[in-house]
Image (cartoon, rainbow, N blue to C red; front, side, top):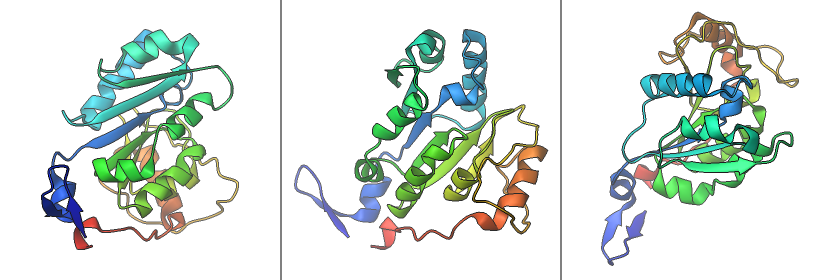
Length: 213
């Protein structure tokens, strides 16, 4: 596939996808700190995130949280992050993050999307992004339950430092899975056990190789 740039230059889709490569970080911070949205906890979580996941200069960050948690949640992340304040209604922050994503636009602008959440509500988005040719990585933190549906919908899993418990699958549709060796990014023993259990539940999604089009 060939892409017409704003100045009229025609370039290959491969070249277009490699100019200023970046990632989109979607942060469900209330989920990541297990509801303990204090300044100390949020700052510590973000420090672990930057260390274990990394944030590039071209990366974009979107964080959503209830207004009552706005101060500790929003001040923990960089000043250039997109902040979305919501009501305290159930799933309000999750829905705000979902609404912030235009799959087509993200696929054009980013090579990878990081979903920092264990919530199953993000699974359809992860599948849509992968189908559009975007690599999707899930990030979990210590003590955070991991939806089997979301895990199986992502390309990879990163467990932040200190995440040494066995995480639980909250997916009524998941029953059993064959074992496999954990990926390198599944750093903790707890997540490795979970990953082994869920191995063959991950669907073989048909992704689009933009470089090959």
